[in-house]
Image (cartoon, rainbow, N blue to C red; front, side, top):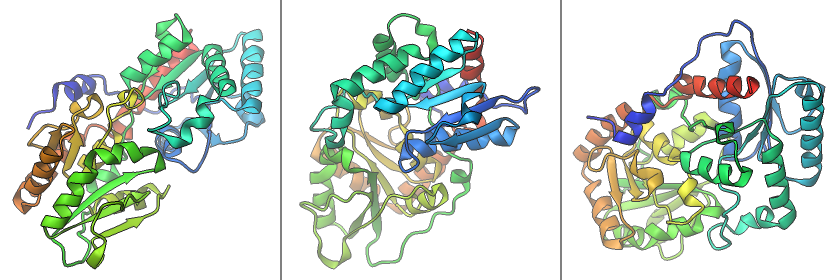
Length: 363
């Protein structure tokens, strides 16, 4: 199989890294240690940078070690008190001829629609929006997860396009070797979806199709995170769910139980800057996907090879889901998916993070 053109282009820019001649001191100032962005944008790169020999700490509180670090990575700093400290640190470091202030953001916090993310009200508040813009502009550089998000951030920051660095999300190598185990039960196919309460609008893209497939075929549905059982057959154990976990090995084991991973995504301004992380994870774990035909996923799923890319059509979603009830089709797509995802591990791409940090330090 061949990689899609988008992934092949990105693969040319993969940057593994060697142990450093001079270790960097890097402090990840995290917004939270409870959500997914902590895992993928703080913990995973911090662990890998530390393994390579850099001095790395991460946490939600700024201390003396962090203030003196070569690189301070502030994850979506926007609350009032953290913003004051961020501005003070930026001014302090500029006064001493130092740089290394990196603003990290992996969502379009400037285009959160109320209907698509009911928890986004905090980011729509005028004070928070003003803080986000001021903190972006005070940073020496910015890291984001996708090219569309980079375009959004460049417009907000104004000028200086080279200050924004795209550092894609990745999976851990262990995903490629996680053993797939089908959970016991009377139904032959387990469909899976993962998401928080902020993805209700996305789930609706596939909801009617899922209900129809469950009613017509011997299959069941599992939710990871927040469940959306409305309109689904609740009899005979057809629907179940597990809460979100920040243990990445446990998360991989849960996703690896899916026979088919569902990745519906509404075509909103906010989603246009989303990464394909859920799809990447599923492919790395050997789980075929049915994904929305949106830019976020289009470049990562080879239609008919690693899964299916489908429009916002209930009929097409049903057709794709039913097609993947064939064990032979799933087995072939499982192998192809793992092959396609093999290059996109944090271990293979950590050099992209370091490239960004060195470029920011040299400005």
